[in-house]
Amino acid sequence: MLTRIRILWSLAFIAVVVLGLSNSLIVAGDDDTQATEDILYMIDGRILHGQIISEEDGIVVFEFIDRNINIKTTLKIRKNEIERIDNDVPLEDASASDEEEDEDVPDVTLKSRQDDLDDEAKKSRFGLRRFESDNENATRFYIIPMSGQMGTDVNPEIYQKMEDDIRAADPDYIIIEMDCQDVGSSPLEFLPEAQEENKDERGLYAINEYREIASFFHTDLEDIPQVMWIQDSFGFSSMVALSWENMYFKPEARLAGLGQLNSMFESFGDEDIQGKMREAHMALIRGFLEHGNYSPVLADAMCRPEFALSGTWKGRQVDWSLNNRGEYIVDNSDEHTTSFTAKTAENLCLSKGTADSVEDLVLLMGVREYTIVGEKGEQIFNKYSEDWRRSYERCLDYWNEYGKFSNWASGGDALKYLGQAKKQLERILAAMNRYKAVEIRFNMQGLSKFGLEIMIEQLKEQIRALRQGQRGGGGGGGRPPGGTGSGGG
Image 1: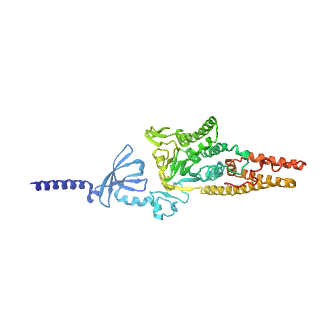
Image 2 (image 1 turned 60 degrees about the vertical axis):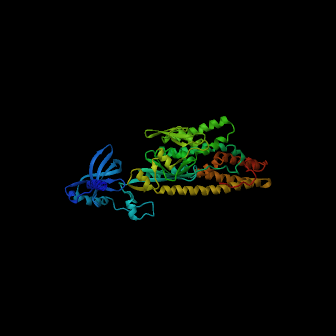
Image 3 (image 1 turned 90 degrees about the horizontal axis):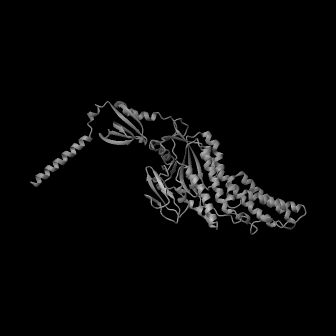
């Protein structure tokens, strides 16, 4: 009796399975009764054949037909994943439509930045196409490097030099590639003591330079849509990056390092002065974030270790708090400042997404056909970086020569060597006038252009006094400590 019951249950189970499969299997003859089908062309390059059942609330309910295995499946597809829909396509034309899709593409060379992909892989990368030559249907991207040392490699002058090329290229978008790991610079040990007393003002000077950079992009180029793509950002570059609302990250990127501001405040012994200086700097930093439509609360969390940071979701927005009472705790320590990885930045809507390559980035932006224009911009950036660094190295030699001639300027040779010392300082001043980066590098390390001009004038006065028969003592107040000076970077 028990065996008979088991057999009956087994037969019932088989019947249910057969009925279920019969709903999924398509009889070949039934297809012939359907004169048309719908075709979905997906953003990722797929082409789906079948019938649209319904469309509502941004969702397409689609009966997908896989003719290779004669099975149909009901899919729910978001409309924003679909590039276009062809309705009621005759079945005899359906296979031809896939071939015609590629015939609309102009006969140009397809190129990917990933050199290790073969030609077929480049053509089929999620349906993405990069055009090497101009194409009126392709979205035009101009890539601008923002890499190296903030304030020198990355300074307003270099980007102003690019403006003509940017305008000539007429891009649809500017992509700014941020790759800076700035950990601050120590003052040069050979600078005059008179300049050392002003070294604590370097940070404010640098921040003003960074404001000029942001102003150039957001004012001079405001008519061109821009995205900030962070390769890595540690230091003041993070403050600059946050002035862009459309921000993307590479998978390994950081947004961190603003805690180095604290060393600037701590250099002031008086607590009242520390507080005033801190607030002055923080007001400037909040300005960057406000321009990017980020909460100014993030400025305090990223700059000051004593603050925690947590967030609470309000719809699609995050309500930030400088404590650990929010739904999502980002930083619960009072020993370090808040930093963001690509994952946390995306999860908390600081970034629009994570892209490992330009191809990934343009796909995230909803672009399928694109071209890179204005490759001269990268050449301008690299040449400027090479030129100013070469000039700066020569200036270090000029400074050492200045120290040597200043020490020799005594007795009967005083006039000759004072003239040589003045000549070296004038060479440095000329380099500062030619390259803003040289001026910024010296200024960040304690020697401003104004201070240099004063030193030159002092030498001129000594030379005039000697020529009038008066005898000054040595090289004057501009002599480096220790006599010879030393180079530094």
